[in-house]
Image 1 (cartoon, rainbow, N blue to C red):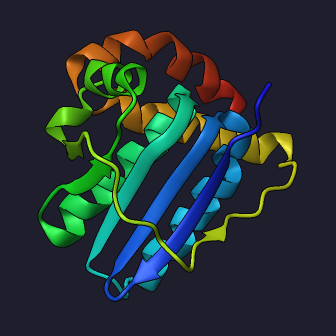
Image 2: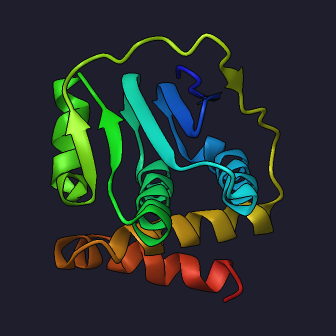
Length: 163
């Protein structure tokens, strides 16, 4: 199994977040922790998501991307731009309704020269369960289709997340 990674760079008042490879739940805790630190800074005015090198993305990471969309809508009053050039990834994005909460562009953006990798480590089970639950809850709240699609997952994870 290919390991995925998450990189970020800042350009003026914009953060660029790039997901590479197979982006799965194992990256969820580190990615969510990064987002919490980023949102706490509140020293930027936009976020751009680059999925042009993403080969696979699971529902946990989709939920964390939805978290970014929610933050941008609440703090900037607009949509985050997402770059994705892979037909399979685009089908997933549209399937969960991301076309309503992101501006999805089917082009490759310019390179972020100063990108830094988000470092990952093995999370404890409680942290992982909470991250999985929160990500799926956010994803399920995007629309009725997702609510139904992820209802059982959210219910199963709720007990494990100690909510």
